[in-house]
Amino acid sequence: MQQKLKTQFSVGVAMSGGVDSSVTAILLKNKGHDVHGFFMALAQPDLEQQIDRVKKVAAHLDIPLAVVDLADAFKATVLDYFTQSYFKGKTPNPCIVCNPRIKFGRLLEEILAAGCDRMATGHYARVIQAQDGTFHLLKGRDPKKDQSYFLHRLTQGQLARILMPLGGQTKESVYRMAADLGISGVHGVESQDVCFLKGRDLAEFLAQASAAEKTEGEIITLGGKVVGHHQGIHCYTVGQRKGLGIPDATPYYVAALDPENNAVLVGKKDDLWQRELAVGESSWIAGREPELPGEFVTKIRYRHQGAPARVMPSENGVYTIHFHKPQLAVTPGQFAVFYKDDEVMGGGEIV
Image 1: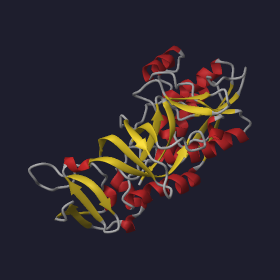
Image 2: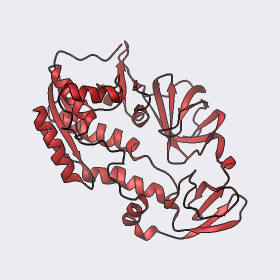
Image 3: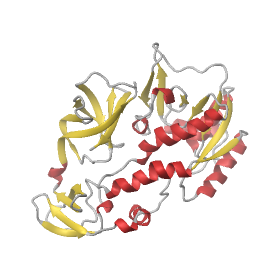
Image 4: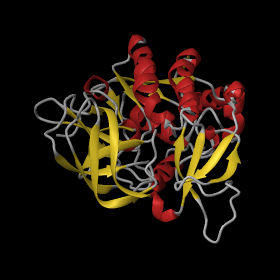
């Protein structure tokens, strides 16, 4: 059963000034809901420009706007995790950590405390409620923009309060709606960057965040031969080919990172394929583990197409994932997310 709205809600819309949140706000307003805009002040390097932009959008839509300062919570929860992960030889996903604890955590709390009934976002994902009252998270209908991967750690309590009006739309249709609704040119340009980088070089950002942890080390083949030196394992990720500086007839790739020995391990492309991986503590949309072993389509990164895999029960908090076919560049620190058809079942960090 599709999640239904009562006649009128007071809705707090998480606004960035971009087209998705702007269309979300005006769609809900046009349906008669009492819409309020909320902007998260985090660690954006262009914070003042973003605030000015979202204020202009809110004024154009004629809705009130509140700026919520979550910078300290964001640093403690997301930025510290992000930087520490790289120095531990992992490749983090900050949006997956931010969503349940900051955006749909602290911001949702602020929106409800302000008297709103629901929180709305411009995510391309769908929330439905079953007849037994449980909430289900589904992929967005636009396969190119589906963002359900980033939302797999949300809880039943959070999903019960969330509206995602764009889940059934394509990006192209949202742009057309923006034109039809008269807000083309009002919203800002879409950004593909992590919000706290905004075009900044990752290595430079990490060096500034933790300069004392920059240590040189060896680049070693999987066979144990030293073939080069690196300036810190935080500069590398599994599957990376560029920037290694190792001449050979065929290119080398980063096969693994060894923080204990401060080493970058390299191999050939054939060395990057594997059938099995381990996932640490996992979260499940239903609030409980499904019946396992079970077969799921599993995505190992956002842009991964997903592949059939068997998920084995947890042993000491670790799940074993066995793919039917080998997968390329399984990366510790990224997240494996499990799907049944269009439905997100849950997921966990690749260890």
